Image 1 (cartoon, rainbow, N blue to C red):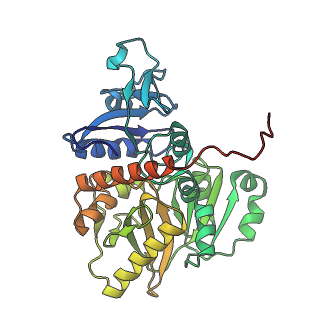
Image 2: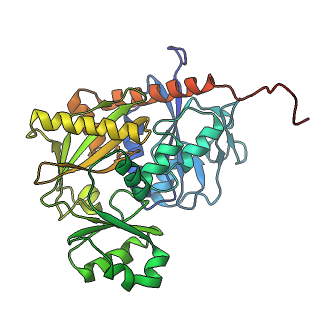
Image 3: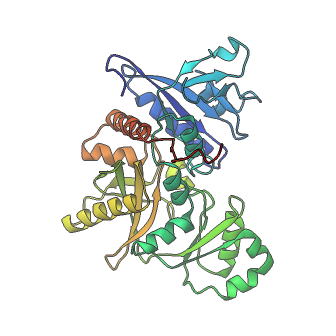
Length: 375
């Protein structure tokens, strides 16, 4: 751990090669604003839609404006220096060489950010980073793999099917004829969040259109049967080996379901503490959230989402390993309702990241066999 009298330098990653790029910019702006400047020195690092890494004080505005330079101006560090290395000329673009990083805070939603790719890269650098590690990030991003793990753990889920876009193009009629789900159904890209590419289909024609929409964002498509009269219940979780759950919240979408516009655009969706749940339901939702968090090997943070049916059953929907951090996002709102401020959440996440990194540093990277067999 760092000395208490030293500011911690935090590299905040945002943007990315994803349909959730814009959501990431809003989330990261909120994180940067709420990091205590008496404790932290923030180094913004934006990733363009083309995958270029742009560091420096103007990186957020450059990404928002779409005027980011065509070439990356920074390389992420590796041990033992932990220093950002500039690829630009000395003094260019307001960036200085060799800035040491203490911890990385990825605020990247969707593919190439939330799916284990960046997490694997950060593992190679040896830097502490906030949130789930590579395996949990990858499994939780893939809705099919997440469901398979959840099935093995005994979670109640809605019936579903999945297929590759190539299969759909080659044998669409066969897939449709064998569909055993009852309408309405939800059609989703498997590796996408923020409701990007998600549609609700009430008949065959709408299903076909929904699949075509989802195929714009992923090669794998999942079709899930809707839960009758479902309430969308969310629980925020924080921690490493001993996670804690927030009070449950409820989403009451302004549209027919919680689509992208309802989440971020029209401002009419109601996001509130689910204060009408019984004490037993609250405890059940919290216990299920922690069980799912542990089953999927999550660390740092995640948000567990459930559908509460008219039958009183909590159906596990999914876990989001980098939940939204915008000013209207449920993850910080639920912790605030539980008694933790936005800044306290960020403090705890950074502390958890550094604790995990310290534990990993205790592991040996060498093995000494009895004989030098490779000589």
